[in-house]
Length: 575
Ligand code: 6R9
Image 1 (cartoon, rainbow, N blue to C red):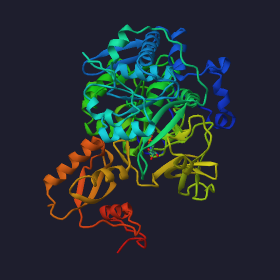
Image 2: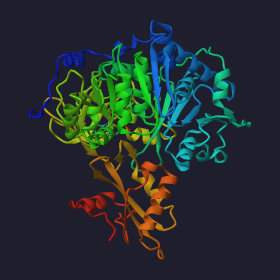
Image 3: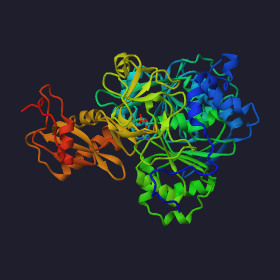
Image 4: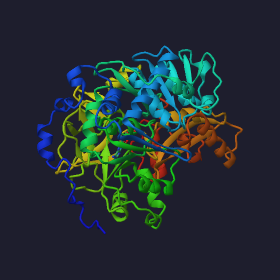
């Protein structure tokens, strides 16, 4: 059994991927990676063609692209079959709507093979696809479809009640994935037409800068923002799938992320499929036993998950693991939150595997700072920049700081997968960049003398709960819609399993009693109005909240109170 006496976990024999990091980092140019794609010669670009058809037309035709498993279904699709199914999906979408190149189409449903057919089919048609978590409630769905003026949505009969069709004048069609769907001029039975549709479809050819996916993500203020990615991101997604995920021809790769999160598209679909790998998708909710069973049943070799999930597995105890054969695992990775050294230690103990942390964001579109298989790991560090990426710690003016100084984690503008737009919000987009040179991430970090980056926290108030990014402002806005609440302040409170939990401080209108029933009612209110993961686990009643004179809730003061920390400068606080 490995121990953690040293602060570095050395590389084991067999971990040969990107061994010559320093040399590659110096010499590599993204243009070198373009040659991998058929558009390099043809000039005709479509990410779904590269991810599916190209393999279907090669020796990988009968190789499994996708294993799908949930409580009720167990299916496998080869690249050849994926080509047919995604062509059919594209034909259905095209035949029953006016969806065209650049139009927004949303997917709002639990994981299923149809979700992946629709996603890739929509991309073949040249649309911009917006994947949504099934947990979203009406308000969250409305905000996203309204902001992006979506023309179509693909959802299930169960979730349809959360799509406010009447309030979305631009929404032309609703494709329903279910049984015995009653069609109207707005509602289309997706599965029925999928069966009947032609399996031939010529992808709509696009340019490298045309849009692919639109992921809405939360900031500390305002409504969620639509981060637009483009076709050219595939260059970085494929390169990192090879370098970082370390995918080889015989691997069975499992990314546990839902496509509602950028990890579930960039590395749940694009990275592995561009690489022609075999992916496993497990639908349904997280269950410890089922997860271990999936690794055993499918012989998963490369596993990409998140600290929250690892901590939940860890919490289930090490005895359970012994009931499963997990010896197929070769390479394990993590993303989404700081990977605690305890979790790395646990991984070594129970799988005898180093868990490789990777850092990136919705806005970066692909992995940026990572631990390669060939790198000695410093537990607690996010690793080093991917070759072709320049990362630095800069001060608020954009001056690069020396090693071991804490500052803004920044990236030199212009990497392939970089977002190209915040939908309808140029000002917000521009606000990410400093001196037109640095993209400023909103994370604070430092770099040590060996070039490893260490995450320190968010500069803003964004909460990371169970790997989900939640904007406090969104939750506060929902809270004050509750009839009892005058004002609300929301913070992330450290939690051993979830990273952070959402804690809300609320002041009540006269006449309302601060009871436990009211707390529960408030919790349900946010759950129904926004999303289950956005509902505060803790609620505290206050007579009054700390505010600036301009009326902004001072979350940092709430946080300091909660954690017994010094409150810092209170000069802007209202008396
Ligand atoms: C891919 C993704 C981005 C924010 C990011 C940071 C946090 C992600 C991390 C990490 C510490 C890591 N984050 N990976 N923090 N170590 N390895 O997570 O995108 O949902 O947009 O979140 O997540 O704070 O700024 P997204």
